[in-house]
Length: 316
Image 1 (cartoon, one colour):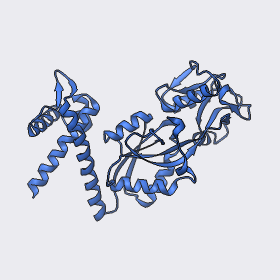
Image 2 (cartoon, one colour):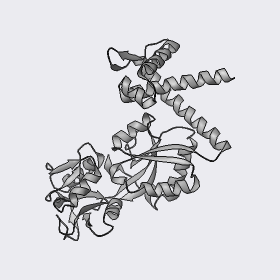
Image 3 (cartoon, rainbow, N blue to C red):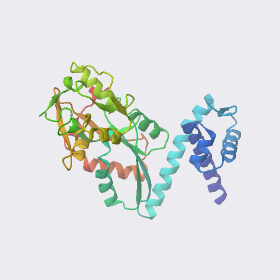
Image 4 (cartoon, rainbow, N blue to C red):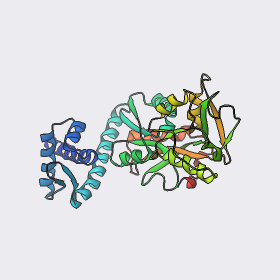
């Protein structure tokens, strides 16, 4: 029995090596991520290939990608590792209070929301450690598929979450964030068509928020011209806004958080007053792991009224 358990654990360990190698695309980085030496990782992959009787990895002096058989094995590996983790958490929670490590990706414009999740979740499950990661929506969904993240907080709606399951959390609008005397700071409101007349600092073009902002400006008759400043960091944008030389476009919740203390001002953006849905995204698996199941229960308990009836088809 002990030998069988040990062999099962060794198989899962080798599958996790394959997943890490595919994610990192480097034997060295994958070894570091798994906490093993590079020779040990190479030996583990080789042993997995021998056990399966097929070549999984194309390699010369460095990682060259997976073979077709490796791609098929990767699908099974992710499924088996996810099931093994879920089983371990389930058995542990049956004996002890829920514990473990929950990894949640968050799009930059939703980074003010995690304390709401944390407070509600840890009130019932104080033994769970939660780590939040700032990620673009595309990276977030990819890392859920790769098992690097357990869940994500991002845009939800038709075609927005890929193969994953989504649970709406809240409805979001946009605000122009500036200083009292900065660009647009004296306005009571501003139309999307007029946003591009201001010196803006925005998230970089690959970010979903930036794509949405550019699309809204364009639909309103404005022209998303080259911006004065771009960054993939919300903190960098806020630092520039505080100088008084720039304005940026952020979500309503983030604007409320940023304007506490009065140094910054949030100007409503109208014509149109566009609404978006932000939600929790989890892998489409059954059953869910206890940690993720508890996270879903938390999300459903704190969902804002009316959010579950909102369609995000305009995002797509």
